[in-house]
Length: 238
Image 1 (cartoon, rainbow, N blue to C red):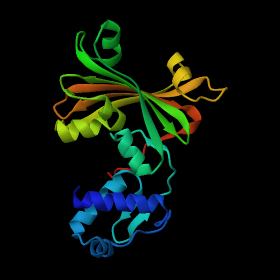
Image 2 (cartoon, rainbow, N blue to C red):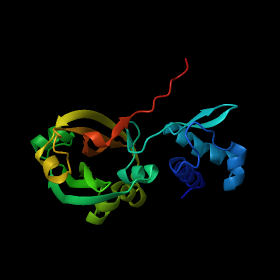
Image 3 (tube, one colour):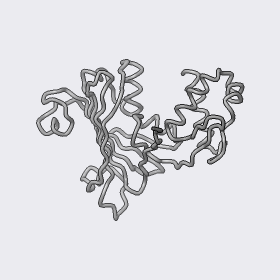
């Protein structure tokens, strides 16, 4: 792990543990450099990521102010794996793999995923338990030729970790859409929904590599009253 990543994770943990509380300033860059035995450039890199993630507001000559936040506030923008999100927000969760199979894209699946008919894919269905209840149902399709060697164990842990660390894939961007859909049969079977739940939050993503190759389609269903979805917007000066 690089030095700025160590600093970033420690600062994130201290913010969520309220060592650094909302609407207060982080230590100065000089103080952080001395504390972590790192250069100011390295500290600035960690602070920039915190700012980009909407956790702090940096002001020249003033410092880094901790922005109010809530746990289980899922980001709309950004491309982050579930495991990374869990580690960042510091919440307890378990993943259960319900389906792990190889198949070929048919006409209906091609319309849904945008993969050409006949493409061989991994089909993975997982549910996530949070606070003792299954609240998220993730259905993923990965191009098998790009995710070759993927195993059930990796699907239970982190697919992205395997793709980036072991296969050196450069995962770059995603096109996302969020809708409120009617609860499906799979939602009823696999999620711990409330008796009055009739709708689900559906987050659909088409994920591409740096060379613009589409390699993943994801449809993630979230229990409506469990999560807040947010985009952190920063005004651009003209």
